[in-house]
Amino acid sequence: MSISLTSVTRPSLQTFMVEGFEKLGLSAEDAAIFADALIFSELRFHPGHGQGVRRLRRYQERIGQKLVDPAAPWEIVKESPALALVDAHNGIGTVAAAKAMRLAIQKAKVSGIGQVLVRNSTHYGSSAVHACQAMEAGCIGMAITNAGPEMAPWGAREGATGTNPWGIAAPTNLGFPAVMDFALTTAGKGMMLWHAREGKKMPLDWALTPDGEITDDPNAAMNGPLLAIGEYKGYGLAFMTDVMTGVLGGGGFGLTPYSDPKKLDVSHTLTAIDIEWFMPLETFKERMGEFSEMMKSRKTRPGFTEVLIPGEQEARRVERKSQAGVPLDDEVLEDMVALGKELGLKSELEVVGPDEESRL
Image (tube, rainbow, N blue to C red; front, side, top):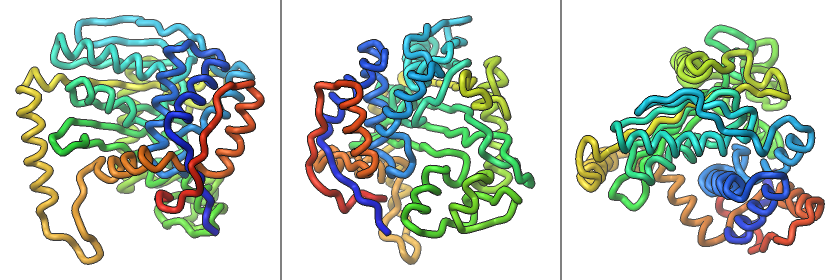
């Protein structure tokens, strides 16, 4: 069965989220950073990915249980003109990463490149959020993180590395940026749950059963490990992502992240490359437009009508949702309304109406 979605206005959602996070103990600055990031994800991605505004409830629970510190210090442990190591002290990962990318951008404007490793952090949301932060500052942005051990190493039937997503963003002259953002697993548990709710089978390359068997039944694989993109190649990328985040940063890696709910021990690496160090920004954008046209001019395969560049589909999704309203899963919307009452929020979500077009 199909899952019902209802659209709300973007301004009302923004106000609601900021007030909600302030009620949970975040500073005004941090609440705005977190709200912007979650709405960014809600606009860009399929609602089944779970990276959007539904996390307000999750953080209400985690903060209430003292599993994450909304007022944690953001400490620079060590730095050089181009590098820094930051301790997030079990704070909000999205906020810690955003501040780290801000620092990476500052360093890139001085040294041509800036890279900041963050340890002792928590879930940082969508990698594209942080990569696009650098892109908007005239840089190529790259954001990577490790995560809980949901991915099975190639040949194994138990998880040992995370989904370990990557995000890379670069400006163009096309009216939207080029953005690559994906986990190193073929899919995540959120999309498996979405398929289960719709009563649909999942592709055979998404996950294994706990016994290590291939299956197209999302319910049968819910307690099993996820599979890597590109089989052993995706596993290799996930392994090296742990090296470039937790191992190098002195934080958690492999089986450690998420093993203790009181200390998720997630690590991130945020990188900004200043385009102006190499050439004028407008020249780079023109070259990106030329490169993109090379891709889009190729003859299409049967069943395809056009060639897209990374981020183009998401840019169209953002434009549509920004105009027509942000579609939310009805279960999520109902829970958010209830949470607003629990927190005593003055803000209310302004409903536009049912949404039928943006489920994918």
